[in-house]
Length: 110
Image (cartoon, rainbow, N blue to C red):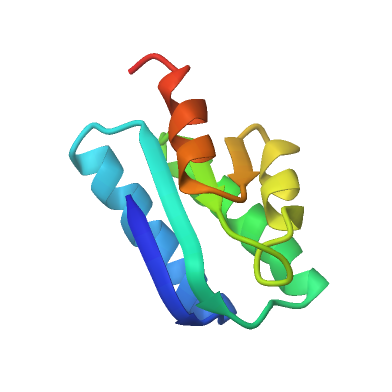
């Protein structure tokens, strides 16, 4: 599980998620829960688009295929970046509670 706190910023979010993906690949983990409930603020629509697109490219280039669950609430997390990733083949979803995310991740095989 990755926990993000503080004010949401594009560069910090990109860096944190890339680190999480690299760590998951190193430890051979394919399920990642990103808890964003401690974040405040929001990204612009273009930043959300770019975040989803850049992370999908990073995963593809790195040969990483995680099941990725985000937990958060609007306006900080609205699911747009997740949809961008889904449109690029990333298996990801957004949830409003950690338990929902855990349940979703549990349906996927290791």
